[in-house]
Length: 134
View (cartoon, rainbow, N blue to C red):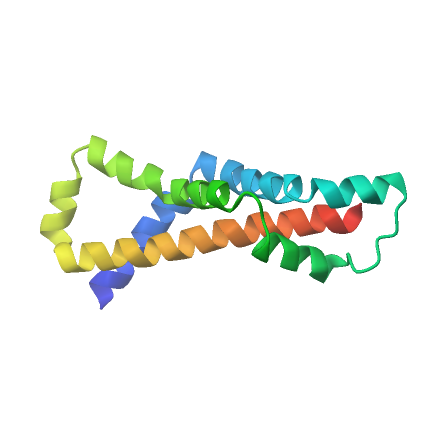
């Protein structure tokens, strides 16, 4: 268990503390904002915006987003850089020897879920904060 926690924290550090992580969070926020361009156009043209409060916009982004596949690709790319870095530096076999395949796969699974969800939530919160100021 101690080895799993250590491996998960190392994987999270490699995936979340990179230069591209913030860029990917902002990219998620931009995709969420672009998906709401019809609502923003109506709001700036002066049409009635009843029913389009912050919770309504959040529900629209979550359930009826036009760019769900693009969001999934961005979320998957959050962790892919870490795996590619391990593969290119040939440190993958040393990591597998030290931790074992079971611990390695489980730690990757947990790290992908945590880093992907935090990137998605950070991007969504950023988009909702921008939406709330308009």
